[in-house]
Image (cartoon, rainbow, N blue to C red; front, side):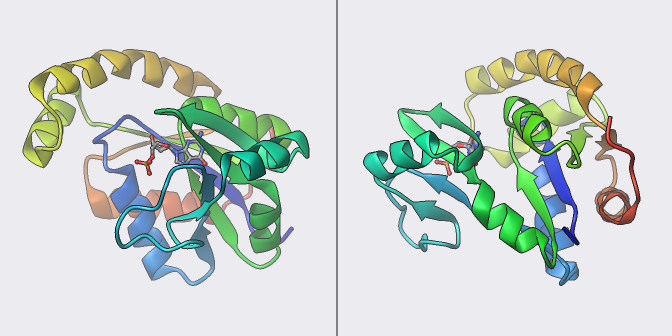
Length: 186
Ligand code: 5GP
């Protein structure tokens, strides 16, 4: 394995997607993994780019064969990280998985050499401000997400690194440095 497997987690609205997308855009040796899902493609989504779109039968078959580093169900559909895709990419590149803490810990169990990174907001107030200005959630949904924050950040105990996203450029530079650094497995 030449590349490093890096899991990036963090609360909704913290800006993890922006950090990961920017790093992948800037570095040819880093890619984002493509997950499998049983949900239907949305308009503009391409099989193999946003997701690998599978039938429920095919997904179940792959679960039985141990094809997923981790999987979970959201809104009655399955989502999972395909082990073969990730391992193939790791032969030449570092791979970033943007998944939740539960998924991240499952990946670490299967691949202890992976590195877990938590993206944290500078403060609760700042996260609230970002969620409000994003405008994609109702006030009630925002409060629900914020109340999960403490729980989510507590789980970060088991994570290898925490990046505070107070300044985008610094956060990208930190993630980039983590991809390059040598770390001992816990
Ligand atoms: P969407 O259908 O909006 O693309 O994604 C729904 C949810 O599935 C999101 O919360 C997303 O983070 C989660 N998800 C996407 N891919 C994976 C995966 O590979 N594993 C897990 N555990 N969750 C995923």
